[in-house]
Length: 400
Length: 221
Image (cartoon, rainbow over all chains, first blue to last red; front, side, top):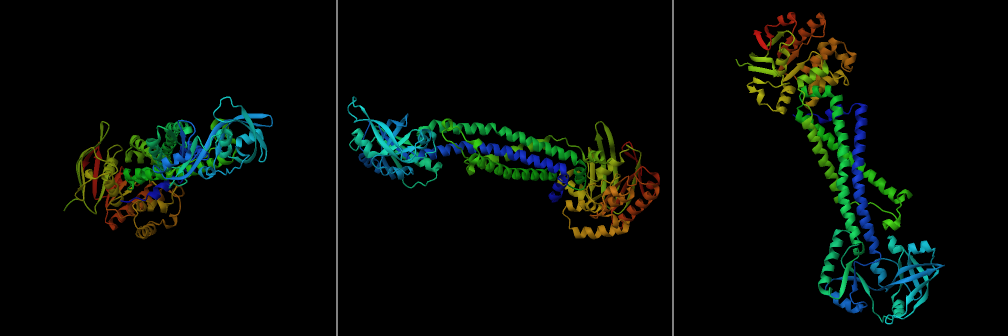
């Protein structure tokens, strides 16, 4: 017999108190799911934003020589048959000292060629006498476009006695890397100018490159393709060069974030379990409040099995509505992260001034499925433990 | 002639005491029975066992040659819905529903075609003089009116077995007589077997088939 489950559900929820209780249950469960989603989203958001930020200062792979400066054209010949390269940029990266208006700071000076801009997706096209500086340097020293800064560089590269020289440059652009450390340290210069000052004669100490046939989205496929290319290069070049993927600089941090994500995700399961106890309380409340209706419905021809089925349908409905609530709360949190000053982070500690949530469909699936399993498991256990009063006993007790 | 219900060595124990103790009985189609007994004699327990509201501790109830013991929970619920009509002493009407909704409850639970039930309910309401009361709530009805609504609900799905537990328990003698007269008349018209449990001697004696119970056993047939 197909019982009318809608009728039974309506009986359960006909009173104001039970509907209010249900609302509380849904909000509580939705909130607990959103806490897990937000935590996972924050961790993945950090991971993604860090990688995206790092991509603004590196190509997919960066190659440095174990023996100091090298000829980039020769390296290009060596790599051409190993991997397919889309962008290839040569760099000279050295340490320097920046002075402006009675303030000074140690910086990383990067001499970049004309291909660098395409390789990292930043607008850095520099002529002789021009520099680009990180956003944080500009903010803390109050440097504006067009201001002149002084960089301290050594003269030549052979003689240790070479005295450092002071060079004036005009700030052409201010670069936002999205990572505090990069914004507060990197200064860009035309590569020819650096090579001339250091007397390098066309040699470089770094190249950075992008692989062909990769889309722009940094996802698992993207990262795997880079790992494969790195392996291929390592096999051929490991005696002369060191090959690093763009995230290598923060590799241990990224790994720690992933481990933390799993651990926190597991601990936060407790929040879900606690909110499921609210659902159990709701079931018990309805069983008590609607005992009369329940016993009468059973007497008139609804089996206990069918009755439990109706409950599970109602619980699945609660779960689904809670998911919608959770998605809504996650989106609210995302908006808060984006616009509220309260959520601004101390960038020197967290690398990035603002975080955002990044949730993949896999994250949604894990959290949604996990909450469903917990819910059904605990509810099933409750129904097994609920005292089974006989129909006769129940009818007599409730209606006498 | 085969009995519609055959009870063999039926017992029901609650803890250590026997509410029903080794009963053998037969009930025939379209007949009307009364079961008399003092409070605690086991008559209501027997009625509920017959109605599939409880399962026996021992023995068998065979209805239309099918053993109720072999029914699973689902089959027993179907049996209660389709085969049995209950008229309870305390009416068992839901206070949050109108009389009409209370009457339609068994039909709605089994998703029975409403039009078929509606016609029968209207006829019965007319017959019992409660048409104007159908949209009222139970607390707006007198005891006798509630019992009539209860009877309409019990007959709404045209049951083959009509079980009544002290149907006049809360009524005065005049109303009791009326209700009993109606039950007998309707069960005849619906071709239902009527079994009434009562402690009222006058009511019990008005039936052609009279049973008496004491300490869980049938003492007179």
